[in-house]
Image 1 (cartoon, one colour):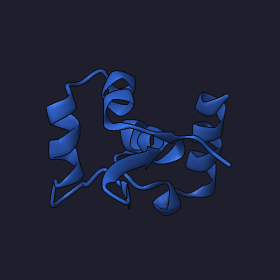
Image 2 (cartoon, one colour):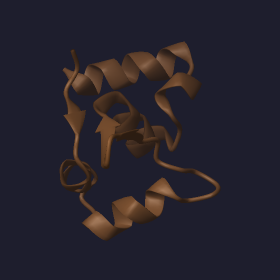
Image 3 (cartoon, one colour):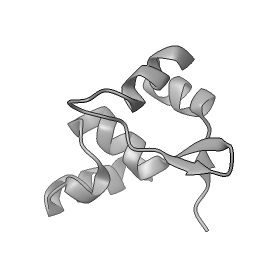
Length: 74
């Protein structure tokens, strides 16, 4: 099972504030994809990286972009 990231972890990963992550989640043009699990908000690492480099959800990336994300993921 893949580890899900918290809002604070995503903020550190994107080098932005916690509040900026919350703003990105509700951005009408390029929203940052998140999961609501119970009362918590979590993010998948691949979606955060896809947003960081391409401003898209991971499932919207083409094959070469997905390979690049895999390279960053290690």
